[in-house]
Image 1 (tube, helix red, strand yellow):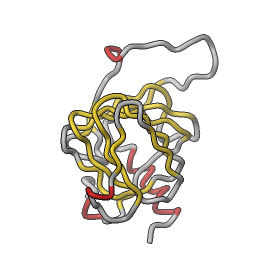
Image 2 (cartoon, rainbow, N blue to C red; image 1 turned 135 degrees about the horizontal axis):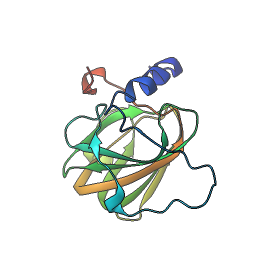
Image 3 (tube, one colour; image 1 turned 90 degrees about the vertical axis):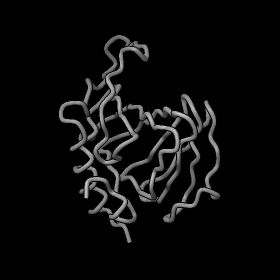
Image 4 (cartoon, one colour; image 1 turned 90 degrees about the horizontal axis):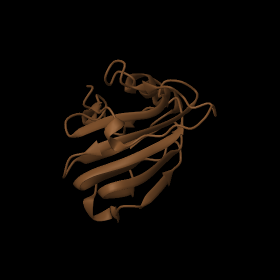
Length: 158
């Protein structure tokens, strides 16, 4: 059983990704923020292991504030069953994300989300998926952000 205290602890652990790479200035409505994909800085995602990279667009994932980031997943990358402490809002920007609700990884249960596809999941609801082709997804929401795997053996931080 996954509890709220565990999710909040995972949020703190998630911040051990790439020192300094997990935050960008939070937008506070002063002018516009514009950028291109070439402006992004990609780094490792310690909580997701090999095959996943992160680029923070705005925010500090450890703060109670808005954030926007992208994940780049290698072809075949598996997102093991996990939960988050806050709503997750995902949009597929490239590739195909196969995604499903549940505590056990099951490729057959996953629904293909092509470019432009999206998903919204509530806090504490277990989910999993995998990438078909190099896949880039954009996530946004309110922090603090984190991840807790339903099976601790799936957590690359262990």
